[in-house]
Amino acid sequence: MRRVPTGRKIEKRSKSQPAGRIEQLSDLLHQLDSRRDDERKLLSRDLHDTLVASLSATKMECDYLLRSGASAGMEAELKRRVARVSNSLGEAIHYTRRVIDQLWPTAVDHLGLSSALRSHVEELRSSSGLAVSTDVDGELGELPEAYSMMLYRAGVEALDFCARHHPPLRPDLRVRRTDAGIELTIESNGPARDDGSESAPFDVGMIRERALHLGGEFALGDSRGAQFQLRIFLPLSS
Amino acid sequence: MVRNASEAESESARVMVVDDHPASAEMLAEVLALEGYAVAVAHSGQEAISTAREFKPSIALLDIGLPDMTGFALAATFRATAELRDVRLVALSGYEQSLSAQRSESAFEHYLVKPVEIDELLAVLGQLRASD
Image (cartoon, rainbow over the protein chains, first blue to last red):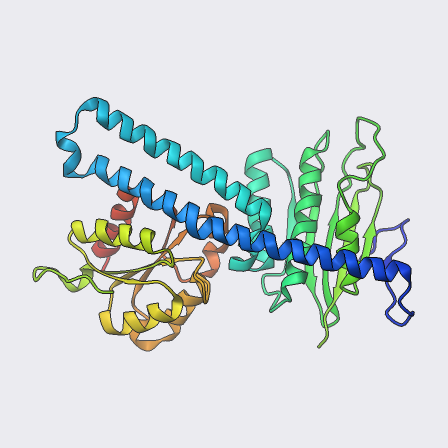
């Protein structure tokens, strides 16, 4: 049974209605978003395939130099400097990977949606101590790239919000695939936000637009924290 | 590409490196060759399958982010192919969390984060050879 956040209407764009001004603007926005995604993807792959790969190979050269027989004749000062170069390269690789992931989450390409989401959850657990429970179908099957990316980004935004919240929320993440489509829900019944803010928890505008443009449903529950709920449903044709 | 194995090398010392980045693959291959392994290199999943059939490695180091298929899909292909089924598989990835997320579901015996620490790599290979 599908759980729907209460107290909020489910937004859905009807395809049977004639395209009006809003739909035309939405199409234009989607085209721009899609073009920007293409560029980000290209840039992230370029960075990964060239800069990270070259930095990695160079770091390995340094490390091998330090451990191989060649270093036996090296002066201590030279060894120390090569070790420092190796460390700097390691930091540069780490930083570049973060930029790449922000541009385009390659984990989704490599692992698929469910593993990429679980991977992000693991990272949040270790970096922020976020207590999050997950119920993600291991086998989501083949999904259109736009679907995977949309749901991944929405999930990451919402989970990151839960981790940033004061006090931290304890969200439940669920991803389910049915014959009708795929549904992502993130719900939390944590304590109310202690700064009294009632603003949207994160930039939901683009996420909402993407979901509706894909013919899906979008519902955001109470955003003040006490009953944070996000549900996105994207239809899949059989 | 196959690097010549020294005559003294045993069957268990044949390692295939699969990485789409030439410099990374070459560097790994060079290190392994210097350590006495017979090494073959492939840069894509398809090339890895054909190279493995010829080279018959006992161990394969597979990058997860290959251009034509993921390392996980390639590992599954190895397991489903009679002549490649027994190759010991090690995953290489720049994404530590990605590897851990797949641990329970894949055919890999070991997971290494790139850039690979040479001591760690050699320890893993030694371990695999010892358990042959």
